[in-house]
Amino acid sequence: MGMTVTEKILASRAGKKSVRPGDLIFAKVDFSMGSDVTVPLSAVSLRSMGTDKVHDPSRVAMVQDHFVPAKDIKSAELSKATREFAKSQPGSHYFEVGRAGICHTVIPDEGLVVPGDVVVGADSHTCTYGALGLFATGVGSTDLAAVWALGETWFKVPATIRVNYHGKIGPMIMGKDLILALLGRIGIDGATYQALEFAGAPISDLAMNDRFTIANMAIEGGAKNGIIEVDEITMAYGKGRWKRPPETFRSDPDAEFVQTIDIDIDGMEPQVAAPYLPSNVKGVSKVAGTKVDQVFIGSCTNGRIEDYRIAADIMAGRKVHPDVRMLVIPASHEVQMKLVSEGLMTKFLEAGAEIGPSTCGPCIGGHMGILGGGEVGFYTSNRNFVGRNGARDAQVYLGSPAIAAATAVAGVITDPRELKPSKIISGKAAA
Image 1 (spheres, rainbow, N blue to C red):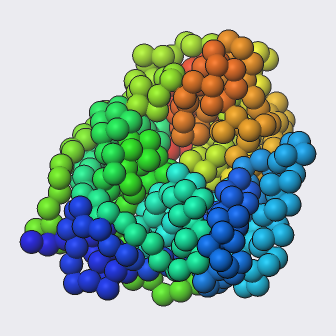
Image 2 (cartoon, rainbow, N blue to C red; image 1 turned 135 degrees about the vertical axis):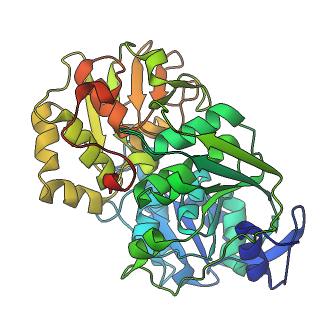
């Protein structure tokens, strides 16, 4: 019996010829990551293990992103502790405010993770990196400390669900729509501790920004990891970027999947997740007309330059509705620079949007965009749980940058196809 791509990667790093779902293994970790809210905890755990040095600093990154710029004394102390620990680990990759951004954008864009890797991060959306054909999953701060100490950790090999997308990507359909369509089908626990392997012609047609979005939200279905096999688009992204040689794995023709899900996207309308679950998914027509108070385009899910190009094109010559606050928060300093060089920052500002520094901010309800009682937001982020983004009775709808831009202009949730942007946006055209 053959193996899936996830099984092959884990077998490789465990030094085994083969593994099967349910096997308990110890595997080498190629790269690990922590943020300003998890590094301080991991540092304490590392010291409790009898050491204050990580196994291989060159395989470790620490990113200031969750509560930065510091909003209060407590967040400043977290950042300080992260900064000091990073300085104590010469050779580690440290990313400071103003020179970095959200970890799940910075890490792959800096070329620190490559196809075939096993990657762990003390953040649940570490699964984002699976878009590069590698195994990536979130762990707790204590587990991260153990990886720092040993350079390896244990895994239970997950069974794999194969998700095959069929059909042609229509206008205004993005990666966000494809992953929401899946979540609407399987729910928040339909892939618990399983790998989600995304495949099919629509996936092959997607640019990397959309692939990262899909892998990012695998965790919203309970998955251990999400993964997309390497192809020419992956390799083009990595050219001149990857710090190490990639290793390509593919699922065998006779690989065993615990489930196969087929999703036909022909004629699919843009998708929206309504409060209070990312799996409460409806076609945009079902929620169109819902009044919103705030629109947020950003986060590790949809804060890349391609996302802002799409939003800016939809908003060209238009203004943010007077009853709406629009927040544009690029996912990295690199994205910020591109917004400036391409003139998009000026366009957003002229439209009436507010530009924020690269931070998780509104996505986690940390700061820079908290919703008040009864307010409604439309976000391009990944979660809309009760109380996550502000007041417990605030409501957040999730969707693509295309819907977000149209909604910011109209003041109500709006199908972006109605605004007739200057470019038809679908598939590789979004790159």
